[in-house]
Figure 1 (spheres, rainbow, N blue to C red):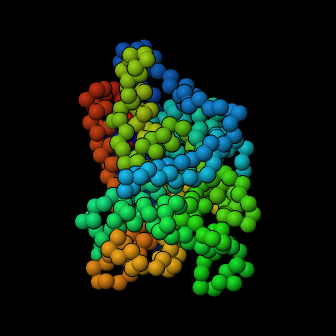
Figure 2 (tube, rainbow, N blue to C red):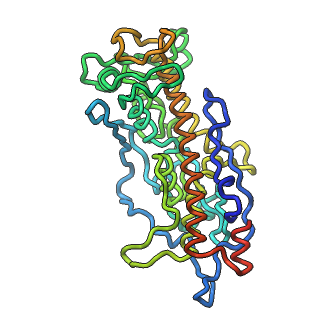
Figure 3 (tube, rainbow, N blue to C red):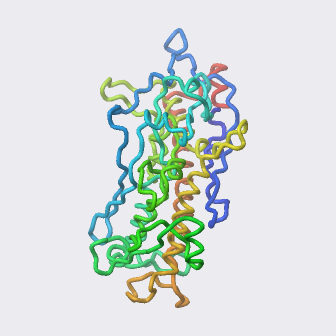
Length: 393
C-alpha cells in the first residue's frame, strides 16, 4: 500500500461510535500488492531489509515480569498509578490467555497489513506484550481533570479544582480522601447488595484510581477474594511487533512520530528510502492493529474489544463513584453543573475520552501528511514502475 490517499488510509475513526460504548476503530486499509522493497538508484540489486534485522530492546530473560506505573502532577504533587505487573515477551509467549502474534505481513510487501499468526509465522521478529489500553491514558485523564483550567468545561460541567482531585480522589494519606467500597464480585455477591455492583474492593474500600487499575492488563496473581482474577486481566494484553507497539505508545501520548526514520547517530548515516518505508509502515500499522479482526477466526476477540473492556471498567467504576460520593460536601472544589444538579465523574471521563481519541486521530492524520511530504522531498516520488506502484497502491 502506498501513499496515494494516506490521510484516508490512516483514518483512526474513533469519532463515529456511541460514547457509552466508546468507539470501534474503523480502518480503511486495502490489500498490499506491490513490492515495498524497491531497488535503490545507487545500487545494483534490491536492498534486503527483513524484520528479523530490527533490533529490539534488551530483555532480561531472568526477569519474568515488570511493574507498570505511570505518574501525574496534580496540585503540585506527583501521584503514581500502579497498574500491577506484566509479563515480558518471552513469558507472554507461554501464556495461552494472551493473544499472539500480531505481525506485519511479509516485509517484501509495501503495505502495513497486520496478521495474527503462529510463532512460525512470526519468525525471529521482536515482539512486545502490549497493554492494549495504554496505562498512560488514566494518568492523562487525571492530569486533565486536575489541571486547574476551570474555564475548560465539559458540556455544561465545570471541571473540579485541583485540590479536590488531589486530596479527595487520589491522596490516600489525605483526611478528606474518598474510598469507594464495593466488596465481592460473584453473582451471589450481587444478590446481597442488589442496588450496588460488586467491584471486588476490600471491605474498607479503595481510591478510584486503584479500583480502575484492577481491570487493566496485568499479570498479578492477586488473592482469590480480592480484585479481579488474573485469567480475566491477562486477556487485556496482546503480543504485537515491538516497533509497532512503540509507535502506538507515541500516538497515544499525543506525540507525533518522526515523518521518516530518524538518522542513526551511532553510524552517522541517514536512512535509506527502504528504511523510511519500513518506518512508515510500522507507524501506519498501529491503527490496523487496533482495528484488527481475524476473518478466518470470527470467534477470536478483536483487538479493540480489549481496549473497550478496560475503558468500560473505568466507566463502571466512575458510575459507582457517582452514586456513592456525597456531592456537595466540598462545595465549589467539586465539579459544578450549570443547572445546579449533581455532577458526574463518569460524564467527565466520557467527554474527555471522546476528545482524547479524536486528538489521536488528528495527530495520525497530521503525521500522514508530513510523512508523505517528507518522503517525496527526500527521496522523490519515483520514476520507475516499481516505485510508482508503491505510491499508487
